[in-house]
Image (cartoon, one colour):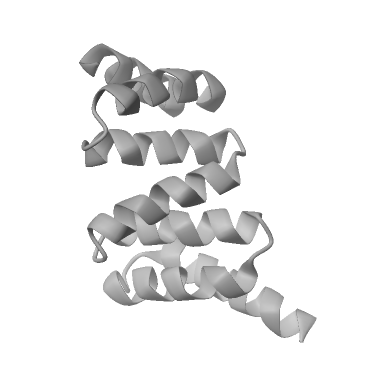
Length: 120
Protein backbone atom coordinates (compact mmCIF):
# COMPACT_ATOMS: atom_id res chain seq x y z
CA UNK A 1 0.00 0.00 0.00
CA UNK A 2 2.76 2.47 0.92
CA UNK A 3 4.56 1.70 -2.35
CA UNK A 4 1.38 2.39 -4.35
CA UNK A 5 1.02 5.69 -2.52
CA UNK A 6 4.62 6.83 -3.03
CA UNK A 7 4.71 5.70 -6.66
CA UNK A 8 1.35 7.38 -7.24
CA UNK A 9 2.62 10.65 -5.76
CA UNK A 10 5.71 10.46 -7.94
CA UNK A 11 3.60 9.95 -11.05
CA UNK A 12 1.31 12.79 -10.01
CA UNK A 13 4.25 15.16 -9.56
CA UNK A 14 5.61 14.19 -12.98
CA UNK A 15 2.30 15.03 -14.65
CA UNK A 16 0.98 11.50 -15.15
CA UNK A 17 -2.30 11.92 -13.32
CA UNK A 18 -4.10 9.05 -15.05
CA UNK A 19 -1.36 6.58 -14.14
CA UNK A 20 -1.20 7.97 -10.61
CA UNK A 21 -4.94 7.55 -10.32
CA UNK A 22 -4.69 3.79 -10.80
CA UNK A 23 -2.11 3.34 -8.04
CA UNK A 24 -3.73 5.79 -5.64
CA UNK A 25 -7.15 4.16 -6.09
CA UNK A 26 -5.59 0.85 -5.04
CA UNK A 27 -3.94 2.51 -2.05
CA UNK A 28 -7.25 4.14 -1.06
CA UNK A 29 -9.04 0.80 -1.29
CA UNK A 30 -6.40 -0.76 0.94
CA UNK A 31 -6.33 2.15 3.43
CA UNK A 32 -9.67 4.02 3.17
CA UNK A 33 -9.16 6.00 6.38
CA UNK A 34 -5.89 7.62 5.29
CA UNK A 35 -6.52 11.29 4.64
CA UNK A 36 -3.16 11.67 2.87
CA UNK A 37 -4.04 8.91 0.42
CA UNK A 38 -7.54 10.27 -0.14
CA UNK A 39 -6.14 13.75 -0.81
CA UNK A 40 -3.59 12.39 -3.28
CA UNK A 41 -6.36 10.39 -4.97
CA UNK A 42 -8.52 13.52 -5.24
CA UNK A 43 -5.61 15.43 -6.78
CA UNK A 44 -5.05 12.61 -9.29
CA UNK A 45 -8.75 12.53 -10.16
CA UNK A 46 -8.68 16.27 -10.72
CA UNK A 47 -5.53 16.02 -12.83
CA UNK A 48 -7.12 13.25 -14.90
CA UNK A 49 -10.11 15.55 -15.49
CA UNK A 50 -12.47 13.34 -13.47
CA UNK A 51 -13.90 16.39 -11.76
CA UNK A 52 -17.01 14.70 -10.35
CA UNK A 53 -14.90 12.02 -8.68
CA UNK A 54 -12.46 14.66 -7.42
CA UNK A 55 -15.33 16.72 -5.99
CA UNK A 56 -16.67 13.63 -4.21
CA UNK A 57 -13.24 12.81 -2.79
CA UNK A 58 -12.57 16.36 -1.62
CA UNK A 59 -16.11 16.57 -0.18
CA UNK A 60 -15.43 13.41 1.83
CA UNK A 61 -12.27 14.94 3.29
CA UNK A 62 -14.17 18.13 4.19
CA UNK A 63 -16.91 16.07 5.84
CA UNK A 64 -14.27 14.51 8.10
CA UNK A 65 -12.47 17.81 8.74
CA UNK A 66 -14.39 20.99 7.86
CA UNK A 67 -11.29 23.09 8.58
CA UNK A 68 -9.24 21.38 5.84
CA UNK A 69 -8.61 24.40 3.63
CA UNK A 70 -6.85 22.54 0.80
CA UNK A 71 -9.77 20.10 0.45
CA UNK A 72 -12.19 23.04 0.38
CA UNK A 73 -10.07 24.63 -2.34
CA UNK A 74 -9.98 21.38 -4.32
CA UNK A 75 -13.72 20.95 -3.95
CA UNK A 76 -14.34 24.49 -5.17
CA UNK A 77 -12.03 24.04 -8.17
CA UNK A 78 -13.59 20.71 -9.11
CA UNK A 79 -17.10 22.18 -8.91
CA UNK A 80 -16.07 25.15 -11.03
CA UNK A 81 -14.54 22.84 -13.67
CA UNK A 82 -17.88 21.04 -13.77
CA UNK A 83 -19.64 24.37 -14.40
CA UNK A 84 -21.16 24.58 -10.91
CA UNK A 85 -19.90 28.09 -10.18
CA UNK A 86 -22.56 28.79 -7.57
CA UNK A 87 -21.63 25.63 -5.70
CA UNK A 88 -17.93 26.52 -5.94
CA UNK A 89 -18.27 29.88 -4.20
CA UNK A 90 -18.79 28.63 -0.64
CA UNK A 91 -15.87 26.18 -0.41
CA UNK A 92 -13.54 28.64 -2.15
CA UNK A 93 -14.66 31.49 0.12
CA UNK A 94 -14.09 29.34 3.20
CA UNK A 95 -10.63 28.28 2.00
CA UNK A 96 -9.70 31.89 1.22
CA UNK A 97 -10.96 33.05 4.63
CA UNK A 98 -8.94 30.34 6.39
CA UNK A 99 -5.77 31.18 4.46
CA UNK A 100 -5.97 34.83 3.37
CA UNK A 101 -2.28 34.72 2.46
CA UNK A 102 -2.85 32.05 -0.20
CA UNK A 103 -3.08 33.80 -3.56
CA UNK A 104 -4.27 30.65 -5.37
CA UNK A 105 -7.33 30.48 -3.13
CA UNK A 106 -8.10 34.18 -3.61
CA UNK A 107 -7.60 34.01 -7.38
CA UNK A 108 -9.89 30.99 -7.75
CA UNK A 109 -12.59 32.70 -5.70
CA UNK A 110 -12.24 35.91 -7.71
CA UNK A 111 -12.51 33.95 -10.98
CA UNK A 112 -15.67 32.11 -9.86
CA UNK A 113 -17.31 35.30 -8.65
CA UNK A 114 -16.41 37.12 -11.88
CA UNK A 115 -17.87 34.28 -13.94
CA UNK A 116 -21.09 34.43 -11.95
CA UNK A 117 -21.26 38.23 -12.27
CA UNK A 118 -20.80 38.05 -16.04
CA UNK A 119 -23.63 35.52 -16.32
CA UNK A 120 -26.11 37.53 -14.22
